[in-house]
Image 1 (cartoon, rainbow, N blue to C red):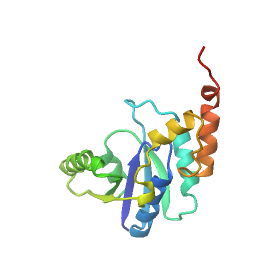
Image 2: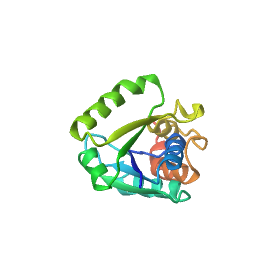
Image 3: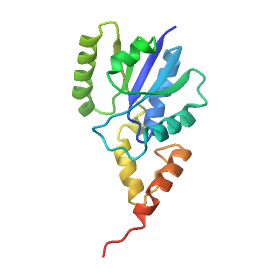
Length: 166
């Protein structure tokens, strides 16, 4: 069984992420969307909320599951009996960082490969950070995230959006 891990913070999961998941699901028998706990980042959504959003967004894909991890990615990949890490590349600017990560992961475990996948060109500009900023400013993010994620963003940001400076 060919298994792949698609790691990320997914804060929140976007249509670009889901495009990569769907592409990976066609190539692998099992894909695990691995939501990372990262203490150095200040996520908008808790780890549990991000996991729930990913699970709902991928529920229609029978060979995709979601989980969480903390620590070294290569250890999680091995624990999941996977052989591949899937990473999304939006633009050339992503490549250098992702390339360094892939080389480090290979150094840590030479049995694990990294593959890079590009989302549809309509999502190459999309990032979770941009989606959160648009939502914070009251913009419509419906074209960028699934409906349940948009609802979660509105609910999470509502008190912040109604503040005025004085």
